[in-house]
Length: 196
Image (cartoon, rainbow, N blue to C red; front, side):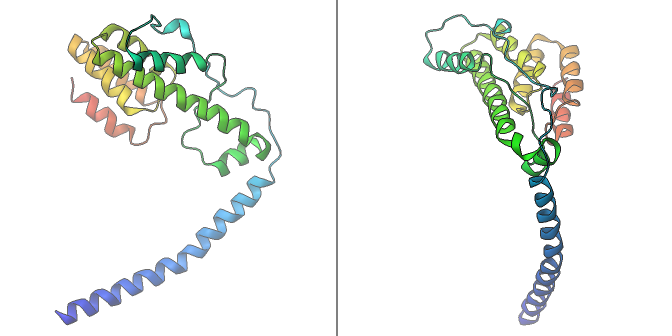
């Protein structure tokens, strides 16, 4: 038993030493990129793929439910705000691509996008829970057109399609996921295929 523990401790120490040797080069690479990013001049961001909310596409009828009213108010507050889906890009990459001076604005646009997607999902889930299925479907389909990266939205929409017997819509949804920035999208696609 002592031999086993000794071997384990030795191997663990070797592993740690190897890790430490590799870490400085990775850290140096990171700081070199960060230094370069901080020196990047601002670039024109007017041509980026901005999203603006289209309230006309959403079922905005008044509801007695306090949660629905809250989500609607949040969605209305986003009307006219610029939004960008910047998932998968680090701050360093954003600075390298668009310049340090644009980082604050880009972060605000990304926050607006996240708030939109989050509220759309919560709004749809609440509508669905209250048995407003058609309205929930409309909200979820709208969020898909905005390239949402919230997996729960795709799952709920696929569930609605499954209950309607709309396999073709599930297949279209699976194809749509290919063009998103969702991490592990293949796993989500496989999950939705199981509903067919």
